[in-house]
Amino acid sequence: MGGWIKILIAAGVATGGCSLVPAAAQIVQRGVVLEMSSGRRPVSGVEVRAVGAAPSDSDMKGVFELNFLASLPGDPLFLDRIYKQGFELVNREKVEQWNLSADAVLEVVLGRTEVIDSLRKRYYRIGMSAVEQAYRRSVVELEARRRIQRIAEAQYARELDSLTRVHARLRQQVDGYAALFARINRDELDAGERQALALLDRGDVEGAIGLYEQMRTDSVLARRVVGRNVADEDLRLLVPSLMNSFRIMRRLGDVEGCDSVGRLIGAAAAEVALKLEVVEWRFAVGERSAALDEYRVLVREAQTVAEIECIEASLHRSLEGATLSKSLGRKVDLLQDRINARMNWAKIKENSWTHD
Image 1 (cartoon, rainbow, N blue to C red):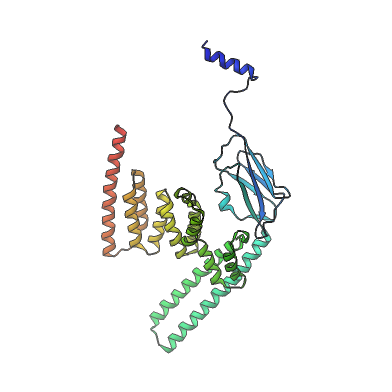
Image 2 (image 1 turned 30 degrees about the horizontal axis):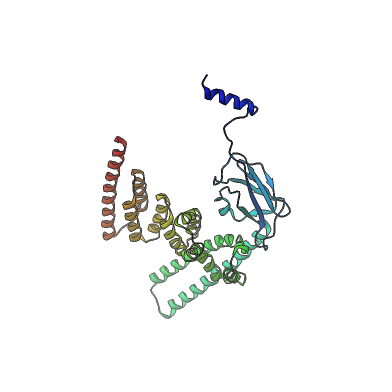
């Protein structure tokens, strides 16, 4: 028997037969549960469950601890249940991005269901009232122009149809914004944002929506990033949050917000699929030339066959059913030529790796 085996056996006897393979160090993840817009009031009796840890309940100070026996710092933290009757989780976006850290105290924010529902209904009433008043005012103005200026029936019909479509889109936006505003945690806003959000309480819907858009534009995010002196690597950590904001604003028809956040995604995202999601949106809203330019840049930066195939599939989705001008048609043809050339280059490169 080899000498090293004898040493292992002897060590096993000396340690009572315990395994010599070191176990992962225990990590205690601490957190605190706070009530939304309450001046950071703690919430006790909240059940918190995480994958890989025993369940925990928040104490009178809102504090909870999760003990992980087989995890390492930096591992994703998957909270699969945060529950207290009568409350809803309002900072889910942040919670879903957490990683384990023994040094950090993670903040879970809950809102009372009845408060959130009441705010949503209130903001919905305020928003719908403003939308209906604006629509009626626009229709009255159009009718006056029809009588006084004697505009053609065809033009009148087109403008009325446009007003009706805008009206329908704004109604949908109000429903979405009401739900979002109802879940804003005012304890996390700075003084300027608090003052701006007060516009919503006074019934200034345009001011409130302007605040929501501003909070998600690149200018505000850039100021916060610069203030924290974060590196490019840290900016990339914001990509999941940016994508979530982009998808919300796309669903609400917020073109300006999507454009601002989309530019940040284009600069920060590493995955080509995320960038393509923004490019496809840009093409769909009518910015076709700009979208084709972005496709061209992505083709130039692509390094693998898989990336180029992804870009080509995205382009075909964008072009499906689209009617293009001659100039845009030529632009598409040139782009397809670039895709083909880049594909050949990538295949040659990958084949050379295979044979090395």
